[in-house]
Image 1 (tube, chains in turn yellow, red):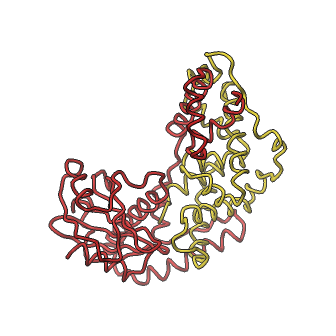
Image 2 (image 1 turned 90 degrees about the horizontal axis):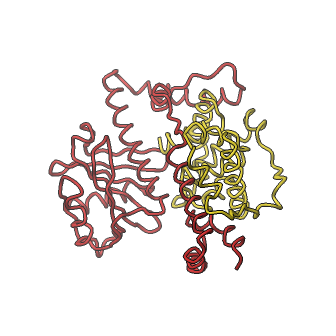
Image 3 (image 1 turned 120 degrees about the horizontal axis):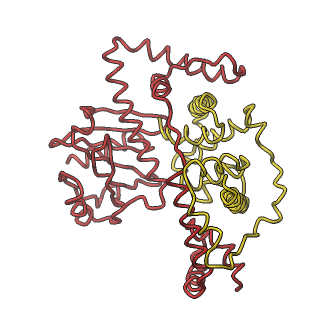
Length: 160
Length: 248
């Protein structure tokens, strides 16, 4: 089963629930098998099957509860903090990172930020691949990544 | 350009997505601005920490086995559309079970499917990687020597000039904790992988066989104590041609 472990990992991060993640993966493969005629040979298979999973989550009960297509801070997407001291907030932050803290911080991210960050950091997808998987323009991908990282840093600074 | 503008580009730069023409200017700024350089370094450290420290969730072995056998148990508590997905897999499972004659056959097939799945995963992951090969060359006289000392075996590579296949390069890879070689080939618009492992790494799953999952096909053969697996989203006949070329 292509990308089984990676799909499960992504599904678990989206659903926060083992049973729902299993259902999501199962449904993904069922839909992939059924709709394989829609896959264009030679194109990005990974983005194609991740998109199936993501769309399945989008229409699930937990996905409908989590997703908001409104991105209220879209206009502020390019803002970022500028450290003015060599002991930057990030430096102080790095001194007390641990796995649980990072997990909590990722869990707290709104799902539209979390999924973009996971695809970029865990799956090492290019912006183009993330764009195809999420079905949004590359500019939106960059915006969500920027805001995801800013939100993550803010959460980590507060100690989770 | 003000530091604020450079800072806005840092994450894109660290993701390897900054347009090439902008990189020299950003690097020059990081060279002369210690604040931005420190910011970039810390962002990279956080990025790497997230990649390495954030938990990875692994599927339960029973779920993996169930998926591999094509058997699902619909969750009663879930909606009907999820049950339909489970029933679809159950129907496929019944067909599969009807073809199976013994538990020994099932175990052997499960192991073969596991190998096939892992190799297809490796192939897909390689193609999606920003650095799909460690040695980039179309010349077999460059690629083959590169593997010396890196893998505990040697293998032959024929001349590909005049064939429809072109060698892209290679990398080392792992299967069942055993190191092997992965060669990448190009055929028209398709990329193919040929994995080479010692036979013990494959648990004996190395015969003249053809397998497939979704649109990926795999053909395996053994030669001189090594197992070869050709994987790609091409026709079986194309894989057979590559196999014939490599065994010539």
